[in-house]
Image (cartoon, rainbow, N blue to C red):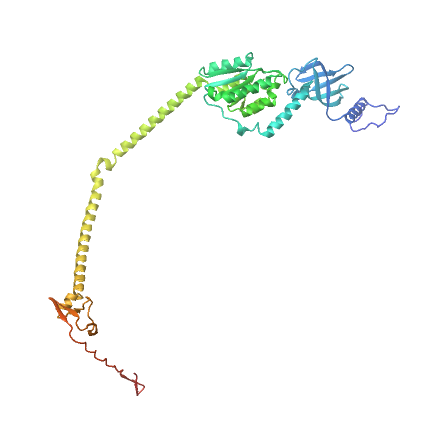
Length: 436
């Protein structure tokens, strides 16, 4: 009879009751998990490789073999070139597979020997450049809408160059391509690429270069490593001309592509992105012509409708009817203005006459006409008192019809004394009181 699921085996086997296979497998599984870290790295040679959605293979060295499995989700992220005979570094966890009774390495990451160091260097460089802002989107330069000259930085022997040339000729033959031949692989490639980009940045405006395509075909991480060097990243970042980078295949990502103003998956895509299609431009021009023609027709029709509407208005059809009320109001206001002006003139004349009469009544001439005169002294000052006249003074008496001259021949008589006025008596409460 089989053991029920909830029944437990004794911790130690006895002669009377042996362990079941499942129990021993569980103990082996627990022992492996307890004795090994959760994740480790193993170096060895790939053998018995089988790609059946999941990867099944073995890692071996001179004296041992370890079965390995890499599930499809992890295998899709693995680099190309993994196969029998390749020395690799595999990262993952070791576990006991109950169904087959074997210990296996469940691989999460795998890379050829030496590639792990390159990837670590690549991650460190990317993090450094990210902190410096080399990847910031706001620093990316805008690509020209219609480039006249494009510089292509690649190897003359690269297939990527022919892809760019063919695409440019098919899309717009008027775009001129200038090749800067450099090595795209090897130890000196990075310096050549950086030097070429700096030369284009320095002299590109004089040569009429509007953009740069930096490209090469696919390859391993070692083949593409020149485009992961800091000197290339600096040259692209400091370039005064927009740079489009297409390095390797779509799954490959290099530092040069991340620093460039635009990254494309392939050389062909880079040329298609940068160089406009002549047929598309002609089609757009035709569409714009049609839209402009339609817009002009609508504007003309609208203007014609406005002219027709204005022709039907009273102002245009019968301007006399529109102007008659205005003319009548103008005539009425003119009459009112004339009447108001006449009244103001009459009022002004009456006021002038009144002021003239008032002035005449206080004029010295009017006083003289009533028989009065006034006398002037030798100095021409008016004589107001006899004390102002001295013996021998020549006086002039002004009359209404002339002047009389006289000479003072005697002393002036003293003035008559002034009489002191007396205040009247006032009766207060039945008694007489004198107030002085």
